[in-house]
Length: 354
Image (tube, rainbow, N blue to C red; front, side, top):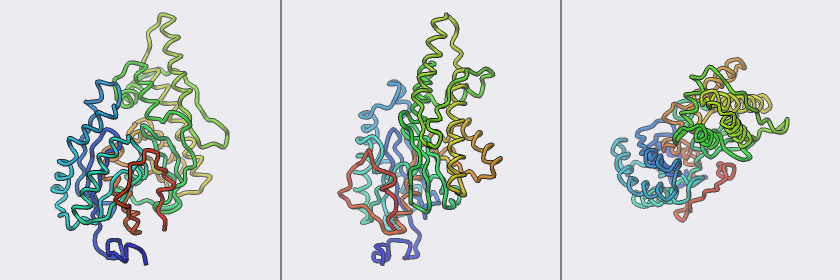
């Protein structure tokens, strides 16, 4: 008998599962109530982008303070918007890691307090599992599948043989895609966050500066973007030394074409090798128009089913945490209240146990 069956809090009880979810891993304070891992009853997000723009990036101490200022109000508002009472809540989920340790701690303390006040179990949740399961909020995931994770801090290919089981088959060896976008954006004069600006001018430019592709070893699914970033800086410096105008659009287009080609080709090759049924795109960079378009076109040609979340579920949000936590809740895999923030939390080790 599972813990869920013993306590009546898992799927064996036959009652709907309402998860109150909290996400504070970086610079968004988010709280959501999700029913049965798929239906979003409320999804509140308080962004700190305007605050961090002045610094050209996220300042951890500032992010933590902003979370403290808004988390209590956000919890109350999310509950009221959902129409669910505290006694109906099945569990409280919260991002345990990865993320900024101070920011994570704010959400964890708030989630523990809610779990204790409501008398409900706690589910420490992996941030990247959340991004992957954002797809579940709008699509039916079919296993086995592969997730292409593209965000500010992560670029990974993840094989999922079954629900809640994660196997990393490829990861970045240096900069993540989002980091590379922000660094290139800063180099060509765009403000933080730079990714959307690079994406926009890349589409508008009729000219392109050809840049290298980092394929690494022939059989590798790993990624590397630091060399591409250096190539961009080299083009800019050489252009300035010749006294010529730096054409931001042409550089942005060249950079984006290089990034997208490598991401798409490695994802498709992994699909073929592992014989999976679906490709899931997820993470903040999943909002990138160039990547979404290229993947859609390639998957259509290959006859591959591609799942991409709506823009609102690509960036950090709490609904995705509620969706991922549902896999743990169904199996009664809860977390002790002495749980600590874990900035280096392993996705594979977070996999469901049963």
